Image 1: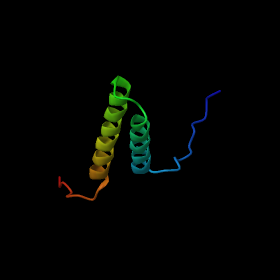
Image 2: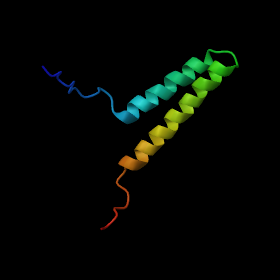
Image 3: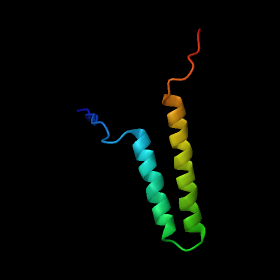
Length: 67
């Protein structure tokens, strides 16, 4: 018997999920004292912002390449 795939769509778009992730990471880092754990959370927030920007650029209707 094969396992069925979960075919539900996420409630939020990728852009919204990335923005929520970065906001949550920054909020959690704000409550921590300076140190490696705070630094790691802030790095993850910056990575999330970069991913959101890349997703925005890739999904935008920019110039189309002709073949």
